[in-house]
Amino acid sequence: MIEGLAALYILMLAGFVGYEVISRVPVILHTPLMSGSNFVHGIVVVGAMVALGQAETFGEQLIGFIAVVLGAGNAVGGYVVTERMLEMFKSSDKRKEKESSDKAKALKDAAKGGKA
Amino acid sequence: MSALIETSYFATAVLFILGLKRMSHPTTARSGVIWAGVGMALATLVTFLHPEIRGQYGLMLLAILIGGGVAWWSAKRVAMTDMPQMIAIYNGMGGGAAGGIAAVELMRVAGDPSLVESHGHLALWLGVLGALIGSVAFSGSVIAWAKLDGRMKKAVRFANQQQVTLAILAAAVLLGIWVALATPGAFVLFLFFLLALAFGVMVALPIGGADMPVVISLFNALTGLAVAMEGFVLDNAAMIIAGTVVGAAGSLLTVLMAKAMNRSLFNILFKQFGPASDETTEIEGSIKDVGTMDAAVQMAYADRVIIVPGYGLAVAQAQHKLWEMVELLQERGVEVSFAIHPVAGRMPGHMNVLLAEAGVPYDMIFDLEEINNDFETTDVALVIGANDVVNPVAKTDPDSPLYGMPVLNVDEARNVLVVKRGQGAGFSGVENHLFYRDNTRMVYGDGQKVVTDMIASIKTL
Image 1 (cartoon, rainbow over the protein chains, first blue to last red):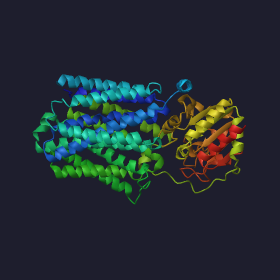
Image 2 (cartoon, rainbow over the protein chains, first blue to last red; image 1 turned 180 degrees about the vertical axis):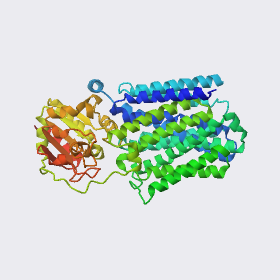
Image 3 (cartoon, chains in turn orange, purple; image 1 turned 90 degrees about the vertical axis):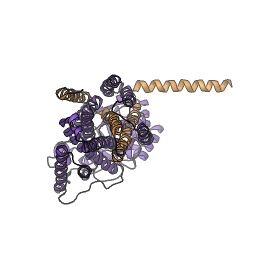
Image 4 (cartoon, helix red, strand yellow; image 1 turned 120 degrees about the vertical axis):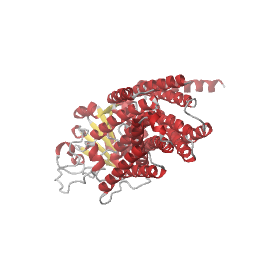
């Protein structure tokens, strides 16, 4: 499927992509991005599943099982922490919108309370 | 069936790259991680149909539920200040998984040498290299996690440490060559992995506090590479692409981080941070302190205030109170911005995450290069929980261990307020000359309490 030279091309191009993606990132996003790239290599879970699926002896199955546990932990944990961090980044406008909508909601609730 | 899987892996690779691209801008970042997440879910689902999988579907599902469940639970609970060690441990898991894949494949090859012919010799060598790198990333990350989580002494050093470390590496490499050439049985494989794991431990052991993030970033890049190599072994394009992208991105990030600390990667890994030079240069001036009330008044009547937060702010859990104070100042018409040093917090950008958690909008936060010329025209610079990153000796004293590190030009502001728990040097152990300047006033006390008092003072004005 992926023959020698073609694999090298993939390797080179993917390397450049990784370099380009990071090089223009503002410092404020370095931690989330490190976390995000940490999540992306969680794709290893796919390989661990294949390895477990091919395992025959007990020893192979045990190691394959552990590999899938670890890979799934990498993928899920990496996703959740990245998402939690990025969720918090908001600009001034967004905050004001949210605050004013909160205020409107509070007013509405107060009005409702008044009616009842 | 194979076409479906290949197409899905291709889509996953595209989603990963687009996702990372979107993650590189604050407004699109959140959607970026969701795109990447969709790719991950797709790849995992179609892998259940993979033609090379011959069974163990139940075990597979169970393993995903256990690993995913535990990680989900811990990731939802972790505090933002503890983020670096969580990233370290998830990264270690990825490295361990890559090592595990290599172990299974090498055991299969040992049992049936004819598999080498179908896989190809290149795949075998890459598999062994991936096993070495993945194992190092695994054990190293676990040590990094234990240290940052306070479960282990900060830096462990002993005599001839570097020689022992290099000897372990040499032995692991030699065994690896043996494994790749002769595909020996379980015992040699076991020794090989044991030595690789030991090398990872030895790399992480002597690294101290401030250097840890750089090493975590390095392990992150290594895990990416290990995943790419195991991708070659399994002929899996999604793993090759994702792993290489992370390997390249992680390496660049590591270098950027090391540069921000004015140290080379070699220095961090093999040389310990020099102790403060013995000769103490005569420091001009004296330390003067000021009460919170006066400090608050000074800020309330200023036109422009720049706040320089450091990790001490997060330790004191004062970031929410600080934002409350900033909002009060803004209501009074004071122009407030935040200046963040690249190594503030425990990782580059960690401080931004902590401020974002408190509700500070990201367009009020500026990098060192963006804001460093503004200090001259600033009335008050408020330093809270930061020390080494504002030490002017980094610019003036070639003998100082800090010399050459980019620092925030806080000393150029008309007035400098430093909130500090007590007297004493920063992480580096270097005396901070900023505290002795004529325009500097110290506000002693716990960060949270000081800011709370300042809020009360501003409200009475």
